[in-house]
Length: 76
Image (cartoon, one colour):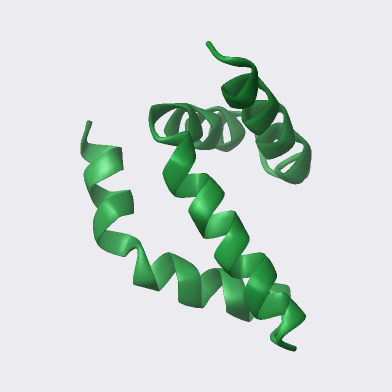
């Protein structure tokens, strides 16, 4: 595992600290499968938040935009 992947996983665990352990493990597993996708998603969410959207709305819109990629990742 590269340092970048390790840091990305640690960040995901921190952001998901209020999520139940089982779901947190599923999410970190997805992040480790395609860290670049999640980096891109995170950057898009941050950009939208800076534009004035709430974090929830920004996350929902970005996840909708990438739903095909996320679904394919879950099938792996």
